[in-house]
Length: 152
Image (cartoon, rainbow, N blue to C red; front, side, top):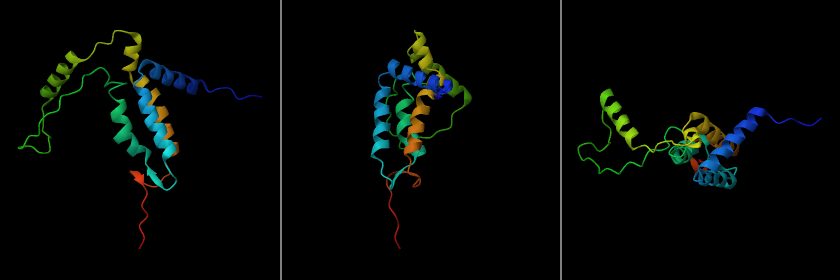
């Protein structure tokens, strides 16, 4: 008796491959994840959550999911009166910023482009990467880099 493929896993793989074919820039993110997974040593720190938040998510978000289609924001000069860059905004300011961003968003004119902007596409692609990172995590704590043991 042979094992039958899991239909859900097959569907996820198909969606993952569809995303890679539709957006070639995603292949570079896959290569980064593959390199990190291969190069990590048992004594290193490669917290999969830290890698996700600091490396993978910022690279993937403009390419697939809700963040796709928006142009890059121009860099702003530091404000000497507000060095943290944080400010409180009202709901109406937030709505106005959203509406202004929608005007500059590239329209989704094909079914594939529309699909690339869905949570389904985002999850199908990122779940595969997160699984690889989690399996490569040597469980030496948070962070990325050499694991330094403290000797006393």
